[in-house]
Image (cartoon, rainbow, N blue to C red; front, side, top):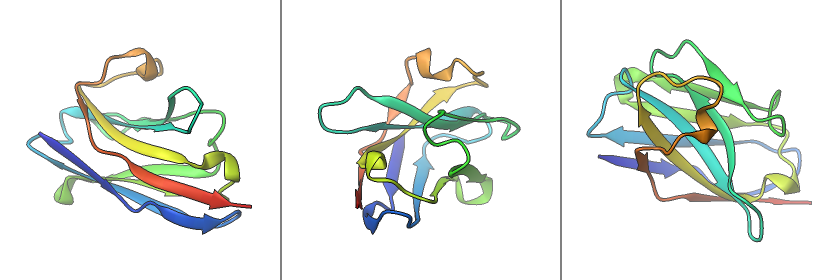
Amino acid sequence: VQLQASGGGLVQAGGSLRLSCVASGLSLDSYTIGWFRQAPGKEREGVSCITSTGSKAYYSDSVNGRFTISTDNAKNTVYLQMNSLKPDDTAVYYCTAILGTIGISWRDYDMDYWGKGTKVTVSS
């Protein structure tokens, strides 16, 4: 199983980025996909996830209303559209997967798979 995240970069505050997570070796129909981020000196934060059915999406309070998670099952890819970016969004973003349909407490689970991160830097 591989989770390949991409799309990070340097953007000014107020700008947008779209992260992609291409999954290989697993089917999005069976896995809940989550995005975590970790900024230097800060604890890891669960940002968003989408259930294996694609019917539910969850967001942290810090990104709710600005970020949107979506899937393209034909491409086995999950996207994280990030708008109105703030300097506090600066972090390495990780794509993760866990088998099954996970609910609102998804951040408390030990994810089955982690991808290498993609770095997002938001300048003020």
